[in-house]
Length: 260
Image 1 (cartoon, rainbow, N blue to C red):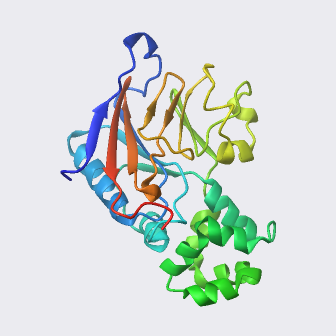
Image 2: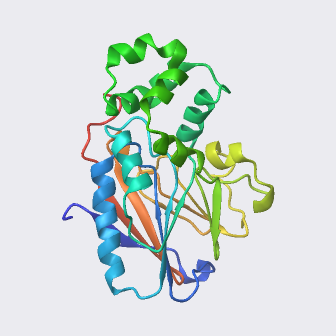
């Protein structure tokens, strides 16, 4: 873990209005995109970090587990079937999972777009040959259902769009500013960028999100951004929330830069 980068929040004390309840520790993990090795390193750090913690602990995964990276299958298997550190685990739906389910459920039909969006790499991680993938673009839903284990599809169907814990709200992309958390639309929670990213508003809770790549984790008074572009040669990032503190951890990508 020598390559792992860690740093504490740099926000001034006057902004520290958000907190996690006493005795509780929450970890949020950004967009994974099929990068199992980096995920394993981050989970190992969390497990080690929890050894001295005696209270409750939560892990929140912010979505986009699949597509683009080398091992979507391994990531889904790890999250859906294997033991994870922490007491409670919350899995959010990203826009990539939403697109896949729309294809499977007949709400979208453009298999070529999904394949260019990272779907080809996902299917290849399940052992499907590139030639078969490209020849099946018109019937991609059928190929997805034939390829993915039922447990993986069930995992994807059970993903949540938002989770709130104490003074924080967790969503894949963010929220629509000016609307209460209870009135947020699923599409915004999975797809929004601006006006959310540029908003200086108090959203009622600090929003922890991924979806939009930034060079470093975004540490703002009203939001925390954790997509640091692991699939694009950046890193896989997480934040530990405890009391009023924020501690950031980033694992550099081992893969080549995107596009390949």
